[in-house]
Length: 256
Image 1 (cartoon, rainbow, N blue to C red):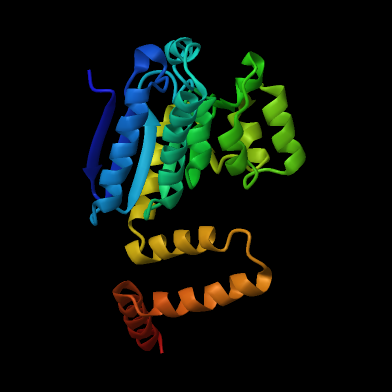
Image 2: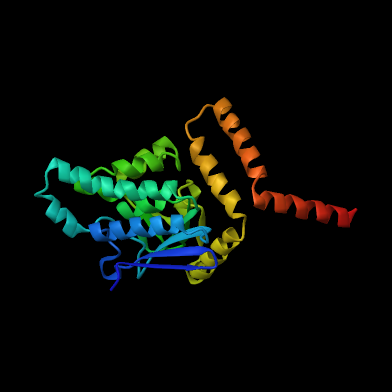
């Protein structure tokens, strides 16, 4: 069985973690496969949106415990290399030229929650739960903390990380951790409609919007507006914008 399934249709690249018998736990091989799938989709000019999902009952239960058993005998440099491999995947999601959407059902825990948090958008089934339980085994979700800070308030982040308890999807939406919650029976259809609607948008506008959002992160207001001026000018010069302006003018003439 392939550890990961990959397909592209109508501008949507679908990446499915495929270890359902292990709740899609992240082995080194699965992390590598996910990184490769992200790289492939980033190079594919036909891809407009990327969706990451999990096969079976859960999105992803976190790091594979068997990997942790092996890690008992690892040295500092080996731990550093292992952490870096996961960090590279989180950064690949963030730096991906297309919007990356996490479709979360069941549980997204630990590293699985980290992958979802790294995505630009999170869509969740009503019965889904997301959590960072590392503290319960004396571990620190150190990398995801950098991402979580941009989604929720500092005090809420502290509570999530030191409490270690999973948060039900409706509550996660209420605190700004996820974007949309869909009824379980409608989840797949609603996710499909959501990403199809996004894929129908201008590819250049989607890319430039994501670039601007993360490029201005941490900037002063003045610097962010200056970056916005540049992006505004760049976006006006794209073929999609020229076509959109022309269609708008044509429509306005018909109404007048």
